[in-house]
Image 1 (cartoon, rainbow, N blue to C red):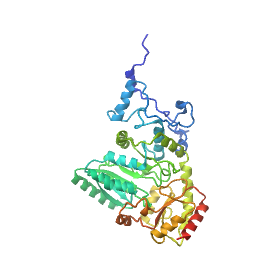
Image 2: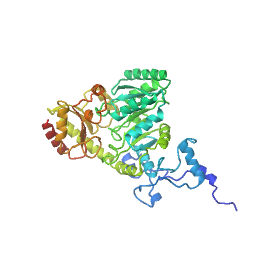
Image 3: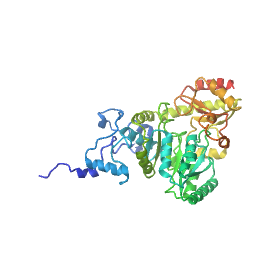
Image 4: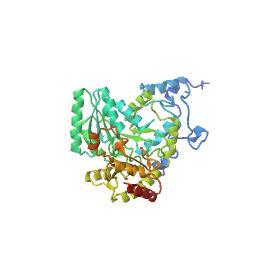
Length: 443
């Protein structure tokens, strides 16, 4: 009678079971299920966790292997000796059940093959850039960017011989061709390559839009598309009102702290895209750390179940509030995607966006003093940085989030002292209008 005892060597071809069922139901009767439906269970099998309807929080630093051969196989994936990463759970700096379920669900929203979670949006951005940049390389980026992102590129990466070329958010195809040609020549002179085209659209805090399709066409024409990914920070509109991967981006970046988290009670970030673009970043994250912790990942799973509802409500509120503010005598202008004056920006919006969002810039008549009076007079809206929470938030970027940006650069980008960034929440819209009205009366 043949020996039925499993041979440990056979386990090399048998991946460790993961905390998600495969294959999973993504269609019913030929109908593809929507992300809002899949958020309720995708990536998680209750049978693997004592029948718990919701995924438990897995507070552990390490995971037991079923046998030695499996442990070896996992580390072959983690170290890069075998492509594809670990087949199972290894160590919480690399992966974990909560993080894997979260990453599976994040990928769904953008139609991405793979996703990675991080301890903050800036951790996601910095690890991603470091994974793709070498000494002598050039990063091309749109402007404005979030101040910390721009500072990392201009100050931190410059220490390692990495330079940058920037362009205005609304640049045309001809202007983009010129910028990428300049960047390519600069990289060649430095003995490097153009490592990444990095976009932020809508831009923080002006809401300026980037033409992703034009960027993609210019990149494909001038640079090596296989070596130069197009990454985009989609925090202001994603994941509901914009899907950049559909328009030519390779990697989509989020501060999950904002709309995805949505309750102003966590800090996290993510990137998503094709697995070939994710693998180098995953390898560096394995070394550096920076993965989202289990509790934060679990809270994000909770938030993803209601992200569509929250964003829809906030967007409807913003439309009503901006309709009130548009012709107010103490308002000098609005940077709201529902009221675009520039034909070029309107064209980009029509092609790339499905909604105007709920974060906008309000220009108070006057300067910093008038903006401060307005902010200090608010009763419902909270004077705080960040955005995308259930509550309405307002701040003055020139004096707060973008204070470190040189004054000349701020003036060039339109980040003026009287610009107030508003993130509308899910309160009653009439109450918000009354608050804005009385606060403007104080100006």
